[in-house]
Image 1 (tube, one colour):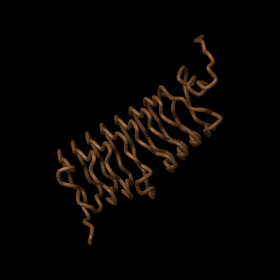
Image 2 (tube, one colour):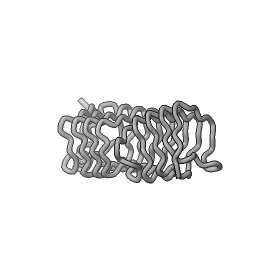
Image 3 (cartoon, rainbow, N blue to C red):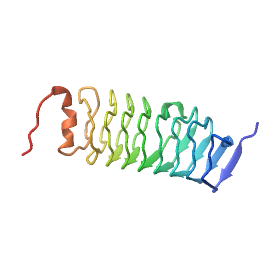
Length: 192
C-alpha cells in the first residue's frame, strides 16, 4: 500500500474519530481546531507541522513521527510519547495541557515546554539536557533517573525533584520553587 504525501495543507475543525486521518506523511501542514482524541495516528509522519487548538487526549501514536512540530493551545491528556517514533523527535509545546502524558526513557534534549500544564506527567529516565520548561505547572510530575543537566526551570512551579535520583548539573532554578528539590527532607525553609 502506497502512503500519501501531503505538503503545505490546512486542516480545520475536523473530527478524526469519525473519519480517521489517512496514513502518510504530512509536511509543513497546519491542523487547527481538530479533534484527534481516541483516534489512531499510528505510523503517520508529521514534519514541520503545527497543531493549534487541537485535542489529542488518549490518541494512539505507535511509531508516529513528530519532527519539528509545534503544539499550541492543545489538550494532550494521557499521550504515550514513548510509543512514537523517537527518530528525529522534536516538539515544542506552548499553552498546552499535557496532564498524565508520558515521556519515559525518551531522548528529548532541548525540548521546549512553555506556559503548559504537566500535572502527573512522567519523565522517568528521560534525557532532557538543556530542556526549557518556561512557566510550567509541574504538579506531581515524575522525575526519576531523569537527566536535567542545563535544563531551565526558573519560571516553573510545583515541581518535586530529588537531586539524589536525577542529574541536575548546571540546571537553573529560582526561589521559592527551588524548595521542591528538598521536599523529601521535610525541612522548613523560611523567607528572608
